[in-house]
Length: 265
Length: 112
Image 1 (cartoon, rainbow over the protein chains, first blue to last red):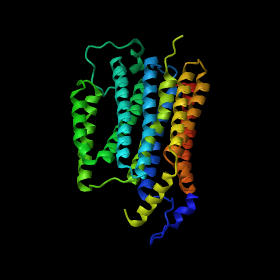
Image 2: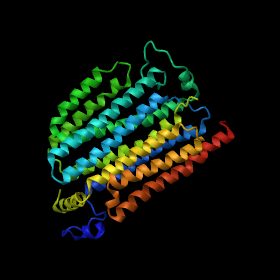
Image 3: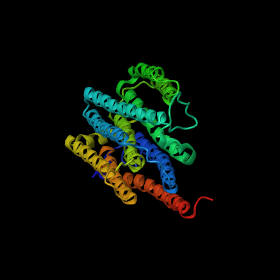
Image 4: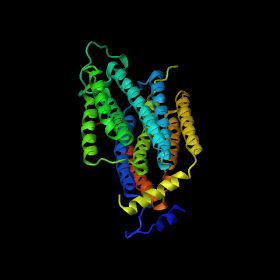
């Protein structure tokens, strides 16, 4: 039905090959390429998992509960995102903004919980050489030899989940720009200051917070060069990105967390 | 956007207007239920390979629900569906063919 309906638009141009507007096709192409990025990271993790007999299983029930709540946050954010798209096509600007803000709130909840998970693991001794040393801390017994015997665990875990956390962070910023436009820039700067000053100097998030500053500058330039009111097509394209981030987590959660859960009998 | 692009966007928006809200809640509920099943299975002392197969099976079902309903691919034209899904699945199959036999070979032969 959709195939024939979309051929009826009179135009001087040839009909759209994919039956939809260009920026949506552009986003799909980007997401396909990003699938391969995450595919490569997931395959690297799985390769290490299969080829290493003493793969650590460090995730206690607290970690699994934390990751399950994170998953619920992301799934709920996908629901609020489709409701935002629905509000936008019905030209309900108020509900569109409310649902976009709800999506951002769920995304921020995910980032905060993930940050807490990372901080706990780093405090217990699971770390990367590039992370600053945590002062006066005792390495947990299960991580005592991991950096020497199975260094690929920390590398693939932080690489994969860090890449995903970066995508979620950029997704929240993207939705913030679509929902609030220029008003979002000062909010982003406040978030940057809060994240930078609110984390200790040995935390990777202390330096990672500068992503928010870079994003504020880039978004400021884009909004200054091309100010516009975002319509339903922009909300739909932003939604595609957001659902993709959710989709990737549906594979990270079982492969990284559930398959490495510490089961006590 | 030019007139043609705006007409296409309006036509896509018109398709969206016909989708009921309840469907999205059903999909959301199904995704949460499958996540709960995954967590339950984690603590059922299953063989790792069997558990991996079940967890990956559930993940693919969840991915299909997200792509089909939330990302709206179910309602796109068939060219869009086939080209996007076939290209990405082909790349992932190629990675599987090259990586996993090699990873298993390391276990079988030992690292030299």
